[in-house]
Image (tube, rainbow, N blue to C red):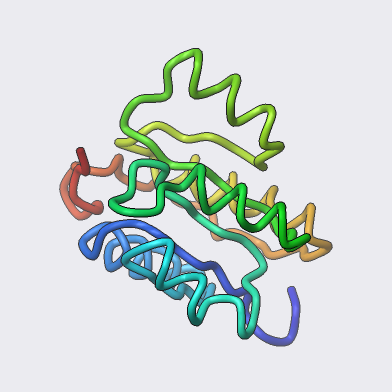
Length: 147
């Protein structure tokens, strides 16, 4: 594992950002939540994250628009898309965007952590996860359901 914890940016609503921050703190990863794509663009790129967790259905600038902006600016780091509706069109669009993973909410915490671990591996980091069972979002002790 790197000498400093990997930085994971989260662009989602406040409750999900807080819940994911708590989850990531359990595995000693540094979470930085943002409530909008605009907020991420204003301050999140000053010290770019190792990975971005991105809700696609955001007010104002959508997750898709943020991805297009990052690509046009030549900014690249692994992105994991989060959505409540991972239909076939969503998956095709995500494949074209070359994201690291697409996860449908409610997300199993272990699946999310493993997706982040794989994404960090793409960035050249090799963080280790503790072995334990994690609740599904919306389950007791897990982050609230979003949608």
